[in-house]
Amino acid sequence: MGGMQVLEWATMFPDRVGAIVAIATAAAASAQQIAWSMVGRRSILLDPAFRGGDYYDAEPGGGPHAGLQLARQIAQIHYRSEAVFAERFGRRLLGNPADAGRFTLDQRFDVEGYLDYHGDKLVRRFDANSYLRLNKAMDLHDLGRGRGGIATAVGRIAVPAMIMSIGSDILYPPGQQEQLRDLLSSGPARARCGFYEIDSPDGHDGFLIEVQQISPIVEAFLDSVADDRPSLLPTGALR
Image 1 (tube, one colour):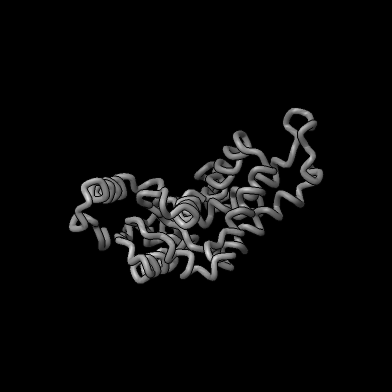
Image 2 (cartoon, helix red, strand yellow):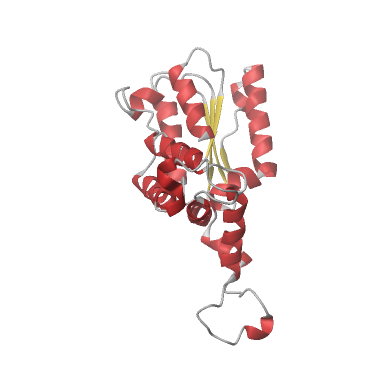
């Protein structure tokens, strides 16, 4: 959502925004992104404790916690990449290692415990109604709505831009950021646009994790904007 807001502000107020950095985001939510979001929201809406969103007088520990937990677990799967799941968890089981050779329906894998942890963590700090609204807002995100299409909307952005992708991102794949780069570079404003694809196994969460890769790029970009030296605008890919 942060990247979506950056793009929206630069489109709405092209004379008030000085430069933008948009990482792992898109000009409009794709059908697959909407599909992922829908199943997460549905898990909340189907929780009997949701009560149509009117759960604030529930007893302590009440409310649609099971649905919100499941929504977070679904999201956590596509925040990371298959390679990370394979390396970190594989097919390891939770519990006593001595039981590894025993096969029962109640055995749990290590990755299941990981998803439980993140689900429980979100429930303790987030509200289900807020989750639903923010999640739907990202589905509705479309720079081109009411502006003659995405190309026309992006064409309003004339300020220097740095667009960044995470190579292993399956939620917001690099093709969406490449579209932004191409539209910014070829639009009527011919905006100065740098582009980097961060080489990281961490999927969409790479935008949070790869600080050592991202920070120098952002710093160099902001320096180039402040000094108005186009030659310093980085472009390429980190490998």
